[in-house]
Image (cartoon, rainbow, N blue to C red; front, side, top):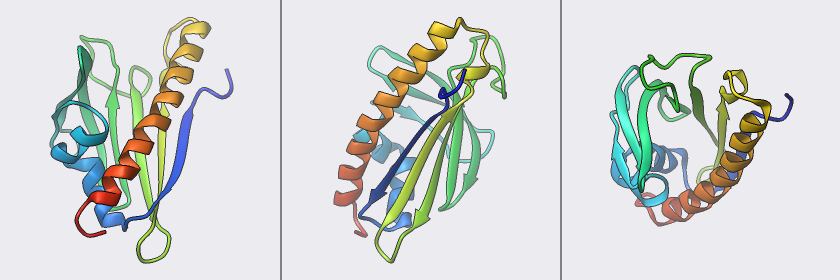
Length: 148
């Protein structure tokens, strides 16, 4: 089913080092994304992201400071997250001049899940809209962060 991978792109008026902190430091993440953040930024680390009464475990996949950070989430409860059973969220940062960063967020994996097609489409639509809202918040947080 085409068009299920979610990709959002934004240019933020802050250098990559600032944006990196905003997407990886728990106190910063709480300001724009999840209200409960238990996260260690190292490959293989297990953590938790909570959104009110929803949320769940995450596993950090990649850490390449300050260009790339990714984690897996939304996997079946009794399984280890891996390609095919979980979603991969990947943040890619690229400097655009001395004080601007292009941030691309990609969420993939749900298209591979054993879900009915309408559930895959619902997930893609909801998360595409959600990432747009979260990135708007992230942009505001980054603009107020030290180092801007």
